[in-house]
Image (cartoon, rainbow, N blue to C red; front, side):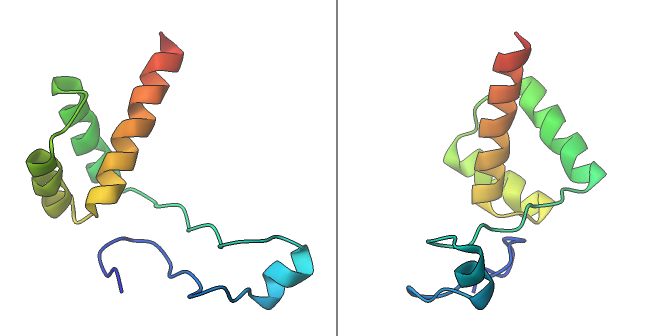
Length: 88
């Protein structure tokens, strides 16, 4: 139902797939990793250099411009801040 998220859909409810049952994993399936385009990464990095934190309206605008979900933008910025912290 989340058309622009870039993620594969998850199983609804408490149902588990046959693969999950066979593997013995419990709970929800993990979402597929988002493959950002080089242009998206370039724009995200450029924005990150200017400001390390985005407000809701800035995140909304950037998500629309890059055709990503706000959650993907939020997660990218969280991960990028952690990367910076590890480098320091």
